[in-house]
Amino acid sequence: MNTLGRCAVVAVLIATAAFPASAKRKAHHAPTPNKGHLEAATRLQIFLDRANFSPGKIDGRYNEVTKKALALYRESRGEQAQTAPSRSNAKSNAAPDVNGLDLASAEPVFIPYTVNEADLQSIGPLPKDVAQQAKLKFLPYRDPADALAEKFHSEIHFLEQLNPGKFKAIKPGDQLMVPNVEPFDLASVKEIKPGSEVTSQAANEMEDQADAQSGTTAENPHQEQHPRCLSG
Image 1: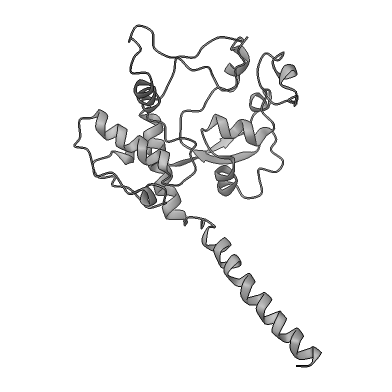
Image 2: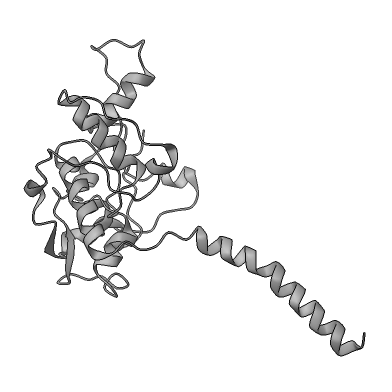
């Protein structure tokens, strides 16, 4: 076989070997849900968030945390337990059974919001050194996108999807579309003193703690610190 022929064979072998890896990468890439699917999933997440059954960070997907929150919500209302989805279905973006839920109460799903100066007051540099972080009264948000994502209980990428091109340089006066949840008061983070505790918890978070702390008494419930608060 001449040199040209050998080169051709090598090229074919390389292309054949590379194809499965490329196909595998594409197979694991989660497709972006269409507008109707995203809105329906967000509606359910807002409904659960308002009912104090946290679906996790709102992301417009029927994720595993959302499905678990829905199951606990139904259980709290005395509804018959539904057949648990398989592990693969629980992690998929397939819609769960939402029959009987007052999802209309979550309308409108998205609302306009105008960014103001107060939204940006909890933003600042964060030292990499843990010892230096411990000296701060609160952990600042990295940037406006980080702060607004927490304010509306959402994933940053999700808000970027709702507001294409607007999250790169957010400033006061910008109008964004956000999920219709009860906004978190960003200013309250600065009012929390180091070592203080926050008692507000989602019902499903308390359920998880009850399972993990079956030996504790009701008179001494576990309380979580706010995620932005530093212990003293």
